[in-house]
Image (cartoon, rainbow, N blue to C red; front, top):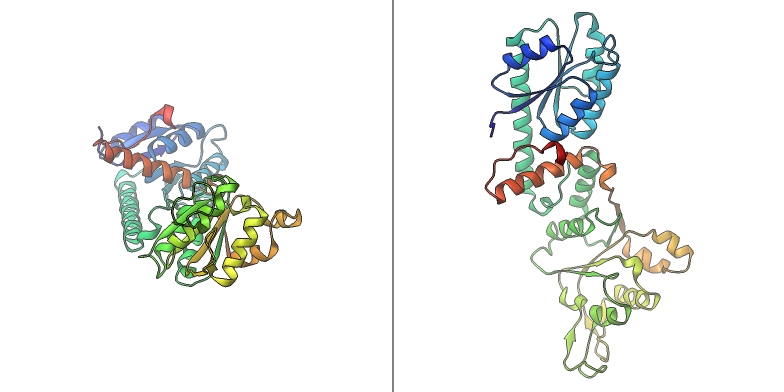
Amino acid sequence: MDDRKVLLVIEDDLGLQKQLKWTFECYQVIIAGNKTEAIAALRRYMPSVVTLDLGLPPDPANASVGLEILIDILKLAPTTKVIVVTGNDDRENAVFAVAMGAYDFYQKPIDGDVLNLIIKRAFQLSELEKEHLKLQQKTNEPLVGIIASCEKMQELGRKIEKIAPTKVSALLLGESGTGKELFAKAIHGLSDRKEKPFVAVNCAAIPENLLESELFGYEKGAFTGASQQTKGKIEYANKGTFFLDEIGDLSLSLQSKLLRFLQERTIERIGGRQEIAIDVRIICATHQNLEILIKEGKFRSDLYYRISEITFNIPPLREREGDALTIAAVFLRRFSELNNKKIKSFTKEGQ
């Protein structure tokens, strides 16, 4: 296993490829001669630093292909340091590339010592940024389970941090698999209820005829098979956080009972007459458009306003630039540590 740092060199000139590979022998140099090879190598090796020649085929006389690759790299791996290497007569495009987000630029002819210094500084900065991210995660453990690097998710995390210490009800919107429960747990973990229970119920996973007893509990003898008094999930969440997932699947009759609970903050077990005071923070989530359901008469507008004091829209992975690569890298590292392996990149088949 090669333990050297990976340096991706995007260069189509065969002579320069050999020169750069020899010059930077202290790194594991990966060569790419065109856009297709460059993106494939980026996905496979996830390098911290890339050198990019702007003049590449099929238009080596201009910078169009190189700038396209730069845009793709910044989307797929926004933390990667890109060093643009260009000719003496193309300084304008080099400066433009830096303005787009490249780390630095260097003009040919190649001076190995100078370029080596720039690359070394880029690796050092990348390591510092990684250490800073680790420190942030350690000081903010409730958000550790959320793997993200794109600006959309970072902004969402900052909003979560602001509202978590309050008592407002939160509604999390997003497609299935976007991590709504993780964000609910993050809100709970950053609140003053973090030492109390976090109880979750998925409305879509429990048959309607059982969901009421699951939520509110029941008294002994309330119905056939009720052989003992049983607390509901809301009661178990007392003093903590109650997370109601897929609330868009809740029937209208249960919506009415949930609304009454939110208004009165008391429940009655099925078959019981005693009102039980409950102190919980409510967080709800759904992949459905509740405003459309309200128009169709399938969801109560008064309940909607109760549960959506603040609303978060969680973007799907396809809209999170660079996060697919970040998540893949995290899972690769976890797998390697779990199995005592030193795997630093994906195979071509795994890209």
